[in-house]
Length: 425
Ligand SMILES: [Zn+2]
Image 1 (cartoon, rainbow, N blue to C red):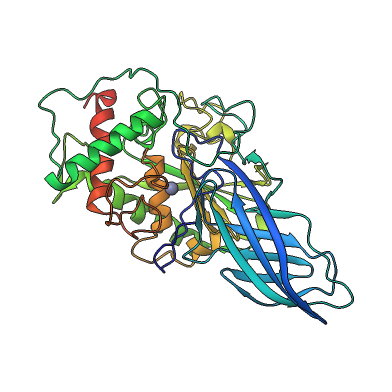
Image 2: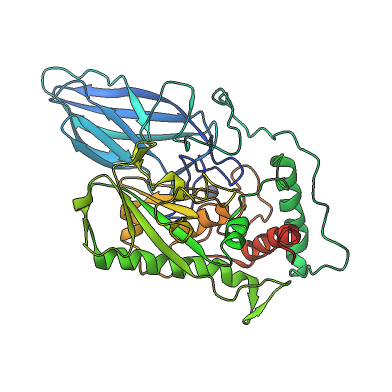
Protein backbone atom coordinates (compact mmCIF):
# COMPACT_ATOMS: atom_id res chain seq x y z
CA UNK A 1 0.00 0.00 0.00
CA UNK A 2 1.24 3.43 -0.73
CA UNK A 3 0.08 6.31 1.35
CA UNK A 4 -0.80 9.46 -0.32
CA UNK A 5 -1.43 12.98 0.70
CA UNK A 6 -4.61 13.47 2.56
CA UNK A 7 -6.68 14.90 -0.15
CA UNK A 8 -9.07 12.89 -2.04
CA UNK A 9 -7.80 11.24 -5.04
CA UNK A 10 -8.56 7.88 -5.77
CA UNK A 11 -7.54 7.63 -9.12
CA UNK A 12 -8.09 4.64 -10.18
CA UNK A 13 -8.49 2.93 -11.65
CA UNK A 14 -9.92 -0.15 -11.35
CA UNK A 15 -12.09 -1.65 -13.38
CA UNK A 16 -10.40 -0.98 -16.37
CA UNK A 17 -8.40 1.32 -14.85
CA UNK A 18 -5.31 0.98 -14.51
CA UNK A 19 -5.60 0.32 -17.55
CA UNK A 20 -3.90 2.57 -19.71
CA UNK A 21 -5.07 3.15 -23.16
CA UNK A 22 -3.40 0.18 -24.63
CA UNK A 23 -4.91 -2.38 -22.42
CA UNK A 24 -8.47 -1.21 -22.27
CA UNK A 25 -10.11 -4.52 -22.34
CA UNK A 26 -8.44 -6.61 -19.80
CA UNK A 27 -7.53 -5.02 -16.56
CA UNK A 28 -7.59 -7.72 -14.00
CA UNK A 29 -9.20 -7.47 -10.63
CA UNK A 30 -8.21 -10.10 -8.17
CA UNK A 31 -8.20 -10.05 -4.44
CA UNK A 32 -7.83 -12.10 -1.32
CA UNK A 33 -9.41 -11.08 1.95
CA UNK A 34 -8.45 -12.21 5.41
CA UNK A 35 -11.01 -11.58 8.12
CA UNK A 36 -9.82 -11.99 11.67
CA UNK A 37 -11.35 -11.46 15.10
CA UNK A 38 -8.55 -10.19 17.32
CA UNK A 39 -10.95 -9.85 20.18
CA UNK A 40 -14.48 -10.75 21.10
CA UNK A 41 -16.55 -10.27 24.21
CA UNK A 42 -20.19 -10.94 25.07
CA UNK A 43 -22.23 -9.23 22.37
CA UNK A 44 -19.29 -7.41 20.86
CA UNK A 45 -16.21 -7.95 18.77
CA UNK A 46 -13.38 -6.35 16.88
CA UNK A 47 -12.66 -7.38 13.31
CA UNK A 48 -9.44 -6.89 11.36
CA UNK A 49 -9.57 -7.25 7.60
CA UNK A 50 -6.61 -7.43 5.28
CA UNK A 51 -7.21 -7.06 1.56
CA UNK A 52 -4.50 -8.27 -0.80
CA UNK A 53 -4.64 -7.04 -4.35
CA UNK A 54 -3.85 -9.91 -6.70
CA UNK A 55 -4.71 -7.98 -9.82
CA UNK A 56 -3.70 -4.77 -11.49
CA UNK A 57 -3.15 -1.75 -9.28
CA UNK A 58 -6.34 -0.47 -7.73
CA UNK A 59 -6.98 3.21 -7.63
CA UNK A 60 -9.93 3.41 -5.38
CA UNK A 61 -11.74 0.43 -4.00
CA UNK A 62 -14.91 -0.62 -2.27
CA UNK A 63 -14.81 -3.73 -0.12
CA UNK A 64 -18.09 -5.57 0.18
CA UNK A 65 -19.23 -8.50 2.26
CA UNK A 66 -22.33 -9.87 3.91
CA UNK A 67 -22.72 -10.72 7.55
CA UNK A 68 -24.04 -14.27 7.86
CA UNK A 69 -26.15 -13.38 10.87
CA UNK A 70 -28.79 -10.62 10.87
CA UNK A 71 -27.77 -9.59 14.37
CA UNK A 72 -24.25 -8.55 13.34
CA UNK A 73 -23.84 -4.79 13.24
CA UNK A 74 -20.91 -2.49 12.74
CA UNK A 75 -20.44 0.04 15.52
CA UNK A 76 -17.38 1.92 14.44
CA UNK A 77 -14.92 1.34 11.64
CA UNK A 78 -11.54 2.73 10.67
CA UNK A 79 -9.34 3.16 7.62
CA UNK A 80 -12.41 3.22 5.37
CA UNK A 81 -15.86 4.73 5.18
CA UNK A 82 -18.21 2.06 6.45
CA UNK A 83 -21.87 1.62 5.68
CA UNK A 84 -24.23 -1.21 6.43
CA UNK A 85 -27.57 -1.96 4.86
CA UNK A 86 -29.25 -4.99 6.31
CA UNK A 87 -26.55 -7.62 6.36
CA UNK A 88 -24.58 -6.03 3.53
CA UNK A 89 -21.49 -4.07 4.40
CA UNK A 90 -19.49 -1.71 2.22
CA UNK A 91 -16.17 -0.15 3.09
CA UNK A 92 -14.93 2.58 0.77
CA UNK A 93 -11.29 3.59 0.59
CA UNK A 94 -10.21 6.75 2.29
CA UNK A 95 -8.32 9.46 0.47
CA UNK A 96 -5.02 8.02 1.64
CA UNK A 97 -5.40 4.29 1.09
CA UNK A 98 -7.26 4.12 -2.19
CA UNK A 99 -4.25 2.98 -4.12
CA UNK A 100 -3.22 -0.65 -3.71
CA UNK A 101 -0.34 -1.76 -5.85
CA UNK A 102 -0.31 -5.19 -7.41
CA UNK A 103 0.52 -7.55 -4.59
CA UNK A 104 -0.07 -4.82 -2.06
CA UNK A 105 -2.31 -4.98 0.95
CA UNK A 106 -4.51 -2.65 2.90
CA UNK A 107 -5.79 -3.21 6.41
CA UNK A 108 -9.08 -1.97 7.75
CA UNK A 109 -11.19 -2.85 10.73
CA UNK A 110 -14.17 -2.16 12.88
CA UNK A 111 -15.87 -2.90 16.13
CA UNK A 112 -19.29 -4.47 16.07
CA UNK A 113 -22.07 -6.07 18.01
CA UNK A 114 -23.89 -9.35 17.59
CA UNK A 115 -26.71 -11.32 19.11
CA UNK A 116 -26.43 -15.03 19.64
CA UNK A 117 -23.69 -15.78 17.13
CA UNK A 118 -20.83 -14.03 15.38
CA UNK A 119 -20.04 -16.10 12.31
CA UNK A 120 -17.27 -14.98 9.97
CA UNK A 121 -18.30 -13.69 6.53
CA UNK A 122 -17.16 -16.03 3.82
CA UNK A 123 -17.42 -14.09 0.58
CA UNK A 124 -15.91 -10.72 -0.15
CA UNK A 125 -15.78 -8.44 -3.15
CA UNK A 126 -13.69 -5.55 -4.36
CA UNK A 127 -15.44 -3.05 -6.59
CA UNK A 128 -18.18 -5.55 -7.15
CA UNK A 129 -15.86 -8.32 -8.25
CA UNK A 130 -15.88 -11.38 -6.03
CA UNK A 131 -12.59 -12.09 -4.28
CA UNK A 132 -11.80 -15.66 -5.12
CA UNK A 133 -8.07 -15.47 -4.69
CA UNK A 134 -7.33 -15.07 -8.36
CA UNK A 135 -7.83 -12.47 -11.02
CA UNK A 136 -10.88 -11.93 -13.10
CA UNK A 137 -10.92 -9.76 -16.17
CA UNK A 138 -13.27 -6.95 -15.48
CA UNK A 139 -16.14 -5.59 -17.38
CA UNK A 140 -14.53 -5.38 -20.73
CA UNK A 141 -16.42 -4.16 -23.72
CA UNK A 142 -17.79 -7.19 -25.41
CA UNK A 143 -16.05 -6.50 -28.67
CA UNK A 144 -12.49 -5.47 -28.35
CA UNK A 145 -10.22 -4.29 -31.08
CA UNK A 146 -7.14 -5.20 -29.16
CA UNK A 147 -7.42 -8.94 -28.89
CA UNK A 148 -7.84 -9.48 -25.18
CA UNK A 149 -6.13 -12.48 -23.69
CA UNK A 150 -8.11 -15.66 -23.87
CA UNK A 151 -7.48 -16.46 -20.24
CA UNK A 152 -7.37 -14.20 -17.25
CA UNK A 153 -4.00 -12.73 -16.49
CA UNK A 154 -2.19 -14.64 -13.81
CA UNK A 155 -1.82 -13.04 -10.41
CA UNK A 156 1.35 -11.11 -10.30
CA UNK A 157 3.17 -9.17 -7.69
CA UNK A 158 5.03 -6.95 -10.06
CA UNK A 159 4.25 -5.50 -13.44
CA UNK A 160 5.44 -7.70 -16.23
CA UNK A 161 6.63 -5.85 -19.28
CA UNK A 162 4.94 -7.07 -22.38
CA UNK A 163 6.94 -8.05 -25.41
CA UNK A 164 7.94 -5.15 -27.51
CA UNK A 165 7.11 -5.07 -31.16
CA UNK A 166 9.25 -3.29 -33.63
CA UNK A 167 8.19 0.31 -33.94
CA UNK A 168 6.38 0.98 -37.15
CA UNK A 169 6.98 4.66 -36.77
CA UNK A 170 10.47 5.91 -36.31
CA UNK A 171 11.53 8.64 -33.96
CA UNK A 172 10.62 12.16 -34.91
CA UNK A 173 12.87 13.64 -37.57
CA UNK A 174 15.90 15.54 -36.48
CA UNK A 175 15.13 19.17 -35.96
CA UNK A 176 11.61 18.49 -34.82
CA UNK A 177 10.42 20.64 -31.98
CA UNK A 178 11.26 19.28 -28.57
CA UNK A 179 11.93 21.99 -26.08
CA UNK A 180 10.89 20.92 -22.60
CA UNK A 181 12.51 22.55 -19.57
CA UNK A 182 15.98 21.10 -19.27
CA UNK A 183 15.24 19.69 -15.85
CA UNK A 184 12.48 17.56 -17.36
CA UNK A 185 14.29 16.31 -20.43
CA UNK A 186 15.81 13.23 -18.85
CA UNK A 187 12.67 12.21 -16.89
CA UNK A 188 10.60 12.64 -20.06
CA UNK A 189 13.01 10.49 -22.03
CA UNK A 190 12.73 7.85 -19.33
CA UNK A 191 8.95 7.98 -19.50
CA UNK A 192 8.92 7.54 -23.25
CA UNK A 193 11.41 4.72 -23.09
CA UNK A 194 9.20 3.08 -20.48
CA UNK A 195 6.18 3.47 -22.75
CA UNK A 196 8.07 1.76 -25.54
CA UNK A 197 9.13 -1.08 -23.31
CA UNK A 198 5.75 -1.53 -21.69
CA UNK A 199 3.42 -1.37 -24.64
CA UNK A 200 4.12 -3.71 -27.49
CA UNK A 201 1.86 -1.85 -29.86
CA UNK A 202 2.70 1.69 -28.85
CA UNK A 203 3.15 2.90 -32.40
CA UNK A 204 0.62 0.60 -33.99
CA UNK A 205 -2.34 1.33 -31.75
CA UNK A 206 -4.81 3.49 -33.65
CA UNK A 207 -7.43 4.50 -31.15
CA UNK A 208 -5.74 6.94 -28.85
CA UNK A 209 -7.67 10.05 -27.94
CA UNK A 210 -5.46 11.73 -30.51
CA UNK A 211 -6.80 9.47 -33.24
CA UNK A 212 -10.36 10.07 -32.14
CA UNK A 213 -9.91 13.80 -32.02
CA UNK A 214 -8.51 13.95 -35.52
CA UNK A 215 -11.15 11.58 -36.85
CA UNK A 216 -13.71 14.02 -35.54
CA UNK A 217 -12.07 17.01 -37.13
CA UNK A 218 -11.04 18.49 -33.82
CA UNK A 219 -14.18 17.77 -31.83
CA UNK A 220 -15.09 15.09 -29.31
CA UNK A 221 -18.47 13.54 -28.65
CA UNK A 222 -19.38 11.84 -25.42
CA UNK A 223 -22.11 9.50 -24.34
CA UNK A 224 -22.83 9.21 -20.63
CA UNK A 225 -23.32 5.81 -19.09
CA UNK A 226 -25.46 6.61 -16.07
CA UNK A 227 -24.69 3.64 -13.86
CA UNK A 228 -26.74 4.86 -10.93
CA UNK A 229 -30.30 4.73 -9.65
CA UNK A 230 -30.36 8.47 -9.07
CA UNK A 231 -32.39 10.89 -11.14
CA UNK A 232 -30.81 13.55 -13.33
CA UNK A 233 -32.36 16.93 -13.97
CA UNK A 234 -31.98 18.90 -17.17
CA UNK A 235 -29.83 21.37 -15.26
CA UNK A 236 -27.56 18.57 -14.08
CA UNK A 237 -27.37 17.21 -17.62
CA UNK A 238 -26.22 20.58 -18.87
CA UNK A 239 -23.78 20.96 -15.99
CA UNK A 240 -22.24 17.60 -16.87
CA UNK A 241 -21.73 18.74 -20.44
CA UNK A 242 -20.22 22.02 -19.32
CA UNK A 243 -17.88 20.29 -16.89
CA UNK A 244 -16.67 17.91 -19.56
CA UNK A 245 -16.00 20.76 -21.93
CA UNK A 246 -14.09 22.70 -19.32
CA UNK A 247 -11.99 19.79 -18.09
CA UNK A 248 -11.24 18.55 -21.58
CA UNK A 249 -10.02 21.93 -22.65
CA UNK A 250 -7.52 21.88 -19.80
CA UNK A 251 -5.68 19.09 -21.56
CA UNK A 252 -6.07 20.71 -24.94
CA UNK A 253 -4.59 23.92 -23.55
CA UNK A 254 -1.37 22.06 -22.84
CA UNK A 255 -0.69 22.22 -26.55
CA UNK A 256 -0.73 26.00 -26.50
CA UNK A 257 1.81 28.53 -25.25
CA UNK A 258 -0.02 31.75 -24.54
CA UNK A 259 -2.52 30.80 -27.17
CA UNK A 260 0.09 29.88 -29.74
CA UNK A 261 0.00 26.27 -30.87
CA UNK A 262 3.05 24.18 -30.11
CA UNK A 263 4.69 22.00 -32.71
CA UNK A 264 2.10 22.30 -35.43
CA UNK A 265 -0.86 21.49 -33.20
CA UNK A 266 -3.97 22.49 -35.12
CA UNK A 267 -6.68 23.10 -32.56
CA UNK A 268 -7.16 26.13 -30.35
CA UNK A 269 -10.50 25.05 -28.96
CA UNK A 270 -11.88 21.54 -28.95
CA UNK A 271 -15.66 21.41 -28.81
CA UNK A 272 -16.88 18.66 -26.51
CA UNK A 273 -20.48 17.62 -26.93
CA UNK A 274 -22.56 15.13 -25.00
CA UNK A 275 -24.70 13.45 -27.62
CA UNK A 276 -26.35 10.77 -25.52
CA UNK A 277 -27.21 9.31 -22.16
CA UNK A 278 -27.66 5.66 -21.33
CA UNK A 279 -29.83 4.74 -18.37
CA UNK A 280 -31.65 1.79 -16.94
CA UNK A 281 -34.98 3.55 -16.66
CA UNK A 282 -36.09 6.47 -18.81
CA UNK A 283 -37.84 8.10 -15.88
CA UNK A 284 -34.47 8.74 -14.25
CA UNK A 285 -33.85 11.49 -16.78
CA UNK A 286 -36.10 14.37 -15.89
CA UNK A 287 -36.30 16.03 -19.23
CA UNK A 288 -38.52 15.54 -22.20
CA UNK A 289 -36.67 17.40 -24.92
CA UNK A 290 -34.73 15.52 -27.54
CA UNK A 291 -31.46 17.40 -27.29
CA UNK A 292 -29.55 14.21 -26.56
CA UNK A 293 -30.08 10.62 -27.62
CA UNK A 294 -31.33 8.38 -24.85
CA UNK A 295 -30.56 4.70 -24.61
CA UNK A 296 -32.68 2.75 -22.18
CA UNK A 297 -31.72 -0.51 -20.51
CA UNK A 298 -29.03 -1.47 -22.99
CA UNK A 299 -26.92 -3.28 -20.41
CA UNK A 300 -23.28 -4.14 -20.93
CA UNK A 301 -20.77 -4.89 -18.18
CA UNK A 302 -23.76 -4.71 -15.88
CA UNK A 303 -24.21 -1.04 -16.67
CA UNK A 304 -26.22 1.00 -19.16
CA UNK A 305 -24.37 1.54 -22.40
CA UNK A 306 -24.99 3.75 -25.38
CA UNK A 307 -25.67 2.00 -28.65
CA UNK A 308 -22.63 0.20 -29.98
CA UNK A 309 -23.32 1.16 -33.62
CA UNK A 310 -22.74 4.75 -32.52
CA UNK A 311 -19.56 4.13 -30.57
CA UNK A 312 -16.05 4.83 -31.76
CA UNK A 313 -14.67 1.96 -29.69
CA UNK A 314 -16.78 -0.44 -31.71
CA UNK A 315 -16.37 1.27 -35.06
CA UNK A 316 -12.86 2.49 -35.35
CA UNK A 317 -13.22 2.59 -39.10
CA UNK A 318 -15.57 5.51 -38.60
CA UNK A 319 -18.49 3.68 -40.15
CA UNK A 320 -21.50 4.78 -38.14
CA UNK A 321 -24.06 3.72 -40.70
CA UNK A 322 -25.78 1.62 -38.07
CA UNK A 323 -26.15 4.54 -35.70
CA UNK A 324 -29.78 5.69 -35.71
CA UNK A 325 -28.88 9.34 -35.83
CA UNK A 326 -26.00 8.88 -38.23
CA UNK A 327 -22.38 9.90 -37.82
CA UNK A 328 -23.21 13.20 -36.15
CA UNK A 329 -24.72 11.23 -33.29
CA UNK A 330 -21.69 9.02 -32.80
CA UNK A 331 -19.73 9.14 -29.57
CA UNK A 332 -15.97 8.96 -29.21
CA UNK A 333 -15.74 8.47 -25.47
CA UNK A 334 -18.06 7.04 -22.89
CA UNK A 335 -18.23 8.85 -19.59
CA UNK A 336 -19.14 5.97 -17.33
CA UNK A 337 -20.50 7.25 -14.03
CA UNK A 338 -20.88 4.52 -11.47
CA UNK A 339 -22.61 4.93 -8.12
CA UNK A 340 -20.37 4.05 -5.20
CA UNK A 341 -17.28 3.83 -7.35
CA UNK A 342 -14.36 5.28 -5.49
CA UNK A 343 -11.74 5.28 -8.17
CA UNK A 344 -11.42 5.83 -11.83
CA UNK A 345 -10.55 4.11 -15.03
CA UNK A 346 -9.54 5.40 -18.37
CA UNK A 347 -8.76 4.12 -21.78
CA UNK A 348 -9.55 4.54 -25.42
CA UNK A 349 -13.17 3.72 -24.63
CA UNK A 350 -13.47 6.73 -22.36
CA UNK A 351 -13.39 7.33 -18.62
CA UNK A 352 -15.09 5.82 -15.63
CA UNK A 353 -15.44 7.61 -12.32
CA UNK A 354 -17.84 7.66 -9.41
CA UNK A 355 -21.18 9.29 -10.12
CA UNK A 356 -21.37 10.89 -6.68
CA UNK A 357 -17.84 12.20 -6.99
CA UNK A 358 -18.47 13.69 -10.40
CA UNK A 359 -21.89 15.15 -9.72
CA UNK A 360 -20.69 16.82 -6.55
CA UNK A 361 -17.61 18.29 -8.22
CA UNK A 362 -19.09 19.64 -11.44
CA UNK A 363 -18.03 23.17 -10.76
CA UNK A 364 -14.65 22.65 -9.13
CA UNK A 365 -11.66 23.94 -11.00
CA UNK A 366 -9.96 20.58 -11.44
CA UNK A 367 -12.00 17.39 -11.45
CA UNK A 368 -8.72 15.63 -11.01
CA UNK A 369 -9.79 12.02 -11.26
CA UNK A 370 -11.50 12.79 -14.55
CA UNK A 371 -8.43 14.68 -15.73
CA UNK A 372 -6.21 11.75 -14.83
CA UNK A 373 -8.45 9.36 -16.73
CA UNK A 374 -8.56 11.58 -19.79
CA UNK A 375 -4.77 11.42 -19.63
CA UNK A 376 -5.06 7.66 -20.09
CA UNK A 377 -7.34 8.16 -23.04
CA UNK A 378 -4.50 10.10 -24.65
CA UNK A 379 -2.00 7.37 -23.94
CA UNK A 380 -0.42 8.58 -20.74
CA UNK A 381 0.63 5.91 -18.32
CA UNK A 382 0.30 5.30 -14.62
CA UNK A 383 3.25 5.41 -12.27
CA UNK A 384 2.51 2.82 -9.68
CA UNK A 385 5.72 0.91 -10.04
CA UNK A 386 8.30 3.56 -10.76
CA UNK A 387 8.79 7.29 -10.46
CA UNK A 388 10.52 9.35 -13.12
CA UNK A 389 10.33 12.49 -11.02
CA UNK A 390 11.05 11.64 -7.39
CA UNK A 391 9.79 14.13 -4.90
CA UNK A 392 7.59 15.97 -7.34
CA UNK A 393 3.93 15.32 -7.81
CA UNK A 394 2.13 15.19 -11.09
CA UNK A 395 -1.38 14.30 -12.14
CA UNK A 396 -0.59 10.97 -13.74
CA UNK A 397 1.16 9.78 -10.60
CA UNK A 398 -2.03 8.99 -8.80
CA UNK A 399 -2.49 10.86 -5.61
CA UNK A 400 0.39 13.24 -5.97
CA UNK A 401 -1.25 16.20 -7.72
CA UNK A 402 -4.73 17.48 -8.38
CA UNK A 403 -4.13 19.37 -11.57
CA UNK A 404 -2.16 19.06 -14.78
CA UNK A 405 1.46 19.93 -14.04
CA UNK A 406 4.32 20.99 -16.25
CA UNK A 407 5.55 17.41 -16.31
CA UNK A 408 2.10 16.14 -17.34
CA UNK A 409 2.05 18.75 -20.06
CA UNK A 410 5.31 17.60 -21.52
CA UNK A 411 4.39 13.93 -21.34
CA UNK A 412 1.26 14.89 -23.26
CA UNK A 413 3.26 16.85 -25.81
CA UNK A 414 5.70 13.96 -26.17
CA UNK A 415 2.84 11.76 -27.27
CA UNK A 416 1.82 14.31 -29.82
CA UNK A 417 5.25 14.69 -31.34
CA UNK A 418 5.57 10.93 -31.69
CA UNK A 419 2.16 10.52 -33.31
CA UNK A 420 1.60 13.69 -35.28
CA UNK A 421 3.00 12.33 -38.52
CA UNK A 422 -0.10 10.14 -38.61
CA UNK A 423 -2.15 13.23 -39.13
CA UNK A 424 0.11 14.86 -41.64
CA UNK A 425 1.33 17.42 -39.15
ZN1 LIG B 1 -4.33 5.95 -13.80
